[in-house]
Amino acid sequence: MVLFLILMLIFVFLMFLTVFVNFYLMVPFAPSNRHATQAMIQAVPLKPTDIVYELGSGDGRLAFALNKTYGCAVVGFELAPLIFLWAQLVKLLKRSPKVTFLMKNFLSSDLNHADYLYCYLTPGMLDKLAKKIETDHCHATIISHSFAIHHWKPFEIIPKDITQKTPVIYIYKT
Image (cartoon, rainbow, N blue to C red):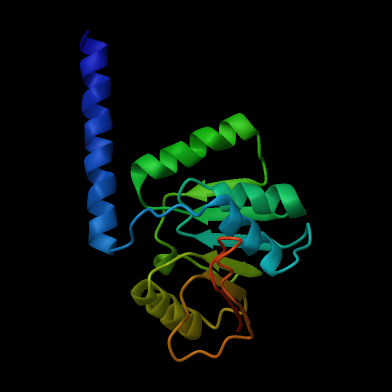
């Protein structure tokens, strides 16, 4: 009974922390459906030697799908503790050694090692990402789900497909 209460307290604390992080950063957990995930995978062909960073990786569904499809290394950045732990659990079950999750703010991380940056971020967070990329002189290709980066011209726009339930995808080359 004591162990159960301790586990419940830990769970409640992690849930509170997750909600706090989501509200503080104003970035809610919004998982993509399988059609959107597939569209993101097909947006840019990758090589097994590519290094991909998924910014705000959530439960890791895109990270795992990219790794499975292309064999590339994927690093997911997620700050929400409960969602991060869930992604770690799924990683253990899937046995994906080339997929890594970091409970770290990507805005304070070195993004220069990435060939590709995949993201499903709010417009405000995309603006912060754009400033970081410009400041750090990052040369990754950015693939953005649903939202454009203000004041940047996309290299390619893949239009929304209502029948396939896929979002608009913006691709930027820096």
